[in-house]
Picture 1 (tube, one colour):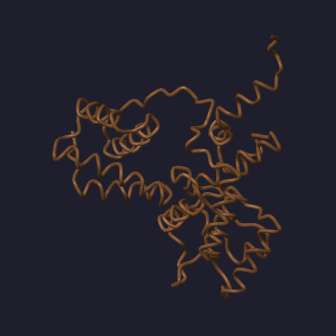
Picture 2 (cartoon, one colour; picture 1 turned 180 degrees about the vertical axis):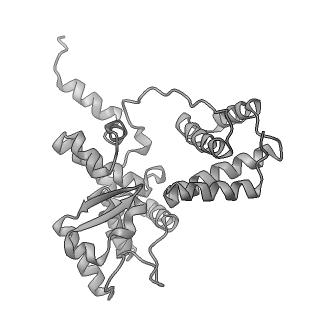
Picture 3 (cartoon, one colour; picture 1 turned 90 degrees about the vertical axis):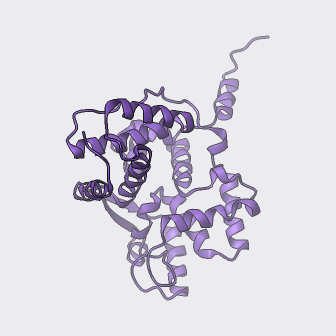
Length: 278
């Protein structure tokens, strides 16, 4: 069996990059494998230890998070040429989203108002751009001056070219923003030095709005804007196949996760059926 050391981890990173994994995926796998290596503390990778590590993960992580780490480890085992794998947990598909994680339209508007009150127009427009298009935060760099002028952004990811159509009003807002800041070409959302904003900076800036916006910080992160877009689109169109295409999902099963509503909304639907006779 193999011992997980610094050279092995570096080699695994190159392996992931050669498989054309996204930068975010590589970063996530590196985080998982580094934590695993620290836990192993020089011991050889063997099935009993893998199962022991899985048990420790179950004590502090959700089932989905455990499966995510297992996916990273199994990818490492494949790279090492090991014939062992760790089984993921079987999770029954949830019907409802956790209410503490559901960002509502009203809360979204309060975040925008808070950003304006803080004088952070870049963040205010960034939040609206993600929420109005459903793009991933990692795709934000593709929202360029050229895309605003053309009304569409082209995103190449995981061997697929995806076209993102930008609403006319959003294009107008983006062009006004770039004209005011004299951004002539390239990414709209950039640092003072002209580099595309980092996802960690965006995440941090959004969290700073929570108190002023009176929104629980467990709901405020870039990917939740993508979920709000998906729920809003589905509530109006009820076309999950088209939504999957817009979000760039290869399976509608993934898209269903994005369209889940809270238990309260489902309860309201049941009460509207009028099937109880007193």
